[in-house]
Amino acid sequence: MTDFLVRRDDLRVYQINDGEEASASTAEGTVQFRVERFGLTANNVTYAVFGDSYGYWQFFPAPGGWGRIPVWGFGAVSVSGVDGIVPGDRFYGYWPMSSYVTLRASPNRAGFVESSAARAPLPSVYNHYLRAVPEAGFEPGQDDANMIMRPLFTTAWLIADQLAANGWHGAEAVILASASSKTAYATAWAIREQDDPPTLIGLTAAANVEFTEGLGVYHDVLTYDNIGALPADRAVVLIDMAGNADVRRKVHEITHHVLQASIMVGATHWEGATLAADGLPGPKPVFFFAPTVADERAAALGPAVFAQRIGVAWVAFADRIPELLEIEHATGADALATAYAGFVEGKADPRKGLVFTL
Image 1: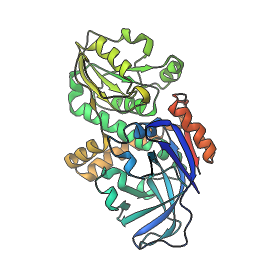
Image 2 (image 1 turned 180 degrees about the horizontal axis):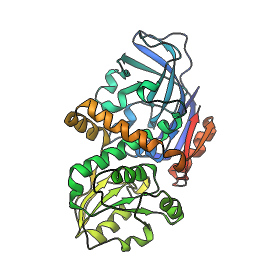
Image 3 (image 1 turned 30 degrees about the vertical axis):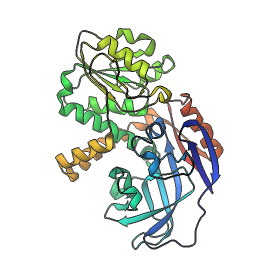
Image 4 (image 1 turned 135 degrees about the horizontal axis):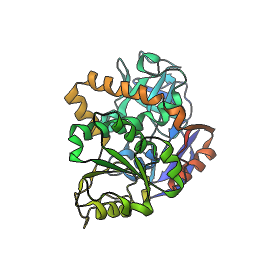
């Protein structure tokens, strides 16, 4: 069966291998899943860019310098060696771009935790798999939204929540680079839902200006060629989804006298992505690692309150997704390879949400 791998040292290079085959049985404590469907976004490229730094390659290890990029989607139980998990059960969570995968599952009320020793040191949020049932918020007809936007929205909500908790760092405006990206405009939406939100300024490529303005979440949209028009006379915060060192430097140079915080979230411009801050005027950029922030907020609010707040916000945002995205479904490794290459080359259409079946 299909197994999609990329070179860890050159994300442009990929290969399609024969992967794990469907089994008639599995070891006690493990479950084999058929990876039903998954979403592909620029966020998955970010996983690859920071695969070594933040352990993303370790979730589904591959041999000899190759890597399996994790994706969010749904898996159906093929065979089970775990009581309470039976063939046909569906779960939402973190999967490889493969036809089948076997996980070590420890059931809980919500679904199960992947409990293999290799996964124990990794961020816990990625080890939780949820039963895909309405009681858990997985309503019929919303699979696509969950695969494409739910993980991105969680990050967006956490950014907005943290900024609000810090009083926007005293800023009057928030600048979002790569403003057409799904995480960026979800962040803008989540910020606008806060009390007394700041002005929102989107930075994007010229080709994406019309789309970005049409989202209705930014007060102003500027192209990367017009960074010089950013305000230099009022306090601002930079939320950088692009990760491009040149873009970040230009923003810092224009705004450093009023820049209150510089927060790097993603790497849509992956080849220029870096956290290096040598010689940058203004505050040192910091990386926003959503799993750590999620753990901190859950501890501060209590897990139930934390989950309830995100859940309510997600339901409200999910209602808007049909207005924002044109969902495209594709089947097979060749279609996946074509789409993946588009993301790596920066040619993906922000208007589309891509869902794949292998």
